[in-house]
Length: 184
Image 1 (cartoon, rainbow, N blue to C red):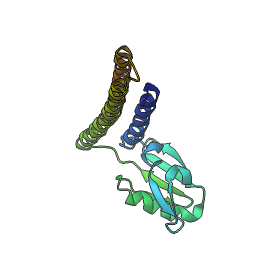
Image 2 (cartoon, rainbow, N blue to C red):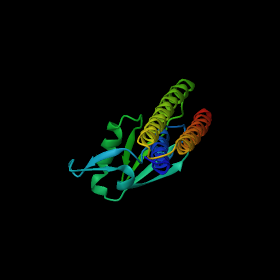
Image 3 (cartoon, helix red, strand yellow):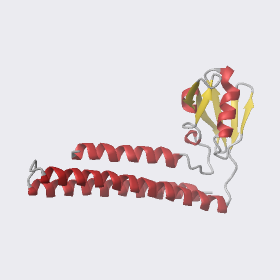
Image 4 (spheres, helix red, strand yellow):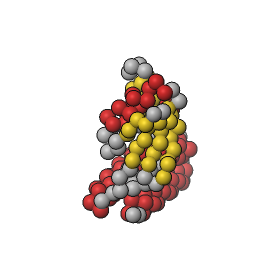
């Protein structure tokens, strides 16, 4: 594994984490609350994300509107969102699905912040695993005399810099999300 691969792997961890943290709901209606929910449609023969099945918009800060591309699966989308256990209650309203987002209590905000911090820590652990694999590969290359000691030290510093940068991005992501959750 070279530093480019390490960087790509850390960026993948960051992308997964951003998607995961976006699902932690705030008191606001945002498409990210439902767009990655996977739903069985067409009698269970196909599994697609909500964003692949419908347009997702907001009516106001408390209401999400989902307009399916194929109106015959509107009830399957509604059922899939309910079964995803994300605390949302979708209601079919003609050709659209309406989801009202209730305001968050202080206790619920604290629970969500705790959940978000767990997700961030899991992200940090994944980044450290990528670093550990990269360091192991560098040591292996050195032991096989494929690289010099100077090159080994340079690569280890580069991997550590990538790790520090990625962890810093995770921390920034967490601070932004926490501010979002604390807004009333």
